[in-house]
Image 1 (tube, helix red, strand yellow):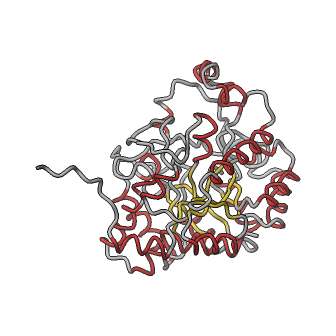
Image 2 (spheres, rainbow, N blue to C red):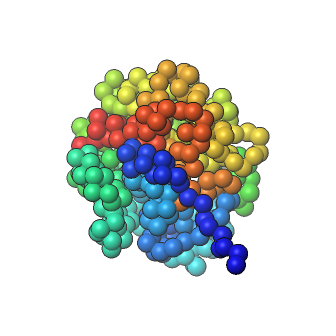
Image 3 (cartoon, rainbow, N blue to C red):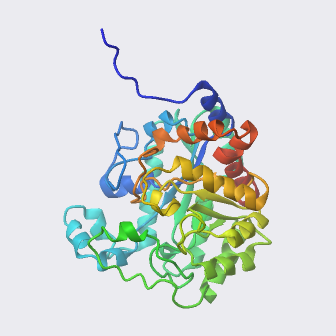
Length: 383
């Protein structure tokens, strides 16, 4: 009898490192898939490589298979300009009611709804996963063997200009805020946050008006002060280079600064990505860089794999900074990304650890990259 095909999985060595680190994905969007498409986050889902926005990639069963111990769940309420600029999406709003709500309803109210619904989903399996609201909470959950969920929010546009709303997020245990996103939010200058080759495949004419106005407005500086007092970590992804530099100048001596889902300009020259100046500023702040698992941000040669170039970029960060203390993994799964051919959902994340070991990286440095650095920045910059 022919034996059935077995789905490949991690080795015992990889599993042990994931438990010890623990493996942490610092940027994924399970709540967005739940909010827009009604996905059961505890169901068994099959995802495929490529751009398939309605496929779930960071569900809890996928996280379990990938031996992921901590996920930073990035809660994102899409900007209403996305629908205003795209007739196709406006039409889709008739089929997906949640899309249509984005055009008219208060975005912070919608964020509350996203958070409430996601927490209810986590609570369905209390023996398997739990939301962490402080760094001490996180340590307890990790020690219990459950998947720890850390709330983050993507895009200050969700505040609708009211920085005092940060107090509510802080009380809820949100650990990090991504300052900018696709469209200008009257606080931080944003770059185009969709790779050109992917943007060319989307039949919409988005008016991003990128890199307009001051790097940071007076309201933006107020928000940075509020986040420091909270305290909540700051993520400079989607900011322009000049806005990132202004953030480093404003709070780099006070707070760890993060870039949670990004590539490097040396390998893919786009203002969304970081250069050596960014790397040094983030390291000097005590922060870290989460390498994204999206081929269009990691490479310029049109190839659809990421594991090889992930090693090249992580190694480049090490060469620039002299240590492995500032590298993390931020997949951006379920963030309407184009998933790579060799690591396309959370069940595949163990492959990163296997690759690092195969490249000869010492186990203690592997543990820093796959989770230790993420745990450190939370201890140093979170409530």
